[in-house]
Structure formats: structure tokens, C-alpha cells
Length: 281
Image 1 (cartoon, rainbow, N blue to C red):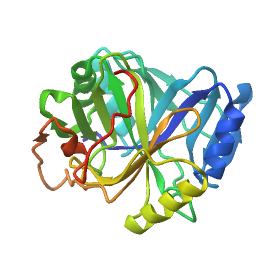
Image 2: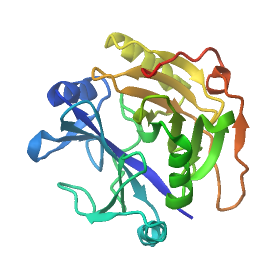
Image 3: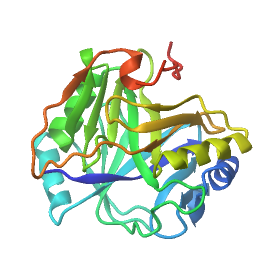
Image 4: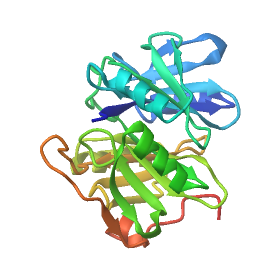
């Protein structure tokens, strides 16, 4: 069984320094490494990094998952070979384990690697516990879903009717990957940090208010995943979610049937209306 947990997200920015200051000042992340070419890695003060900033036009550079198990990477390479999916074994710069690099059917670059140091995770003060999941937009979500489910080994948790939004898991949490059908946009939709509980939501909401960072959606509760959520944008326009109390799955001792939800705003926002946060109309 494929088991993996999101480890980091790499974002391009025309102003890396400004975005670095935002993630330090507002999100509580600290600089872990400075690499050649102006790249900066930010994290928890020790252990692995959660966000990498890369000079360039706005957009996602790549995202990465830590693959669990002694044979996890070997088994993944076998599935990629069987599916005739090109992959490359690379040694990334800096403090980063060797990785398998692929491009998914939408051209998103993804790294899969072995064990990392997670000793810095678990919120201290006003910073998230960990980076939790990523949601991708796609013009062809059926193709992208098939790739991550059938080739990589994610397991489908929930979907909206018509597969306009699907949530898939790779560890015990309800989802570490979401895929949304969009008319004109492919790539990063949003990403999520995990925080502890409802008490933390109140603290974060006050903290974001002090930083003049408006909450665009929430606090609310999703139907799929049953998690609490707020959403806001960083100065570059990247959409960030803070999430807590996500539903857990135990695939090693039980079997789960994916649920199908009504394709309505209420499914993704049980407490009220879900605003349109996307730019593709």
C-alpha cells in the first residue's frame, strides 16, 4: 500500500524577499537554507523545510511527498515503470534526500523522497503544525485523478457528483491531495497547513486581523474530510488554507467506500455559502 505524507511546496515569486518576509512574519516560518540562484527554504526552525521560494514568474515550481516504508520508493518506481511513466532519480540541492522526480499528466513537477526530519513539526506559538495537503486545478481532472489513483497509489476518499472535485489520501488523513475541475486553469489551486483545534482557529483569526490579512472563507467545516477551515491569500496571491481535525482513515485494518457528495457549495461548506475564490470564471 502506498503511504506518503506531503513534505513541502515550492513556489515561484518575482519578489522572493517580500514573500520570505510574509511567511516569516505572518506564518511564523524561519529560513532553513539559502541556495544558489536566490532560492530560499523556510520551515520550523529545525528539521525539514515546508515552503521553498524560487525566483521567477508566479506559479508552482513543484511539490513533494515523503514516501513511507522500507520498500516504498522501490515499489513506486516499479509502478511508474509498469505504467511507462518517465521518472528521474535526482539529488536535490542542499539539505534534501535523494528523490524520484516526475511530471504528472498536467505537467506539474512532483518529487517523491525518503525519510526526512520532522522534529520541528507541532505548532509552537503562532505557526502551523505542518504542511498538510495540496489541491490541484485541472482542465482534465478525470485524467489527473486516474494518474494519481492508478499509477501513484493514492486512494479515493470522497468526490463531488460528476467528479468536479475529488479528494484522495496517501496516509491516515482523509486527503493529502485534491483535484478540482476548472475551465481554464491548471496547476496549484491552494495548499493547506494543519493547526491543532478550534482554539487555534480563534487565535489565528485574530493574528491575521492584526496583520491586515483578510479571511476570505471561514471559519467553516467541510463535508468531505469533516475538517475545520479558513482560507486567505498571501501577498503573491497564493491561496492558503488552515485546517484542523481532519477525518482519519485506517486502511490497514478496514476498507472504505468512497462517498459521493452533492455538487453544491453546501457540501464543501456545511456551515454556509462557499465563495468563488477562483479566477477562471
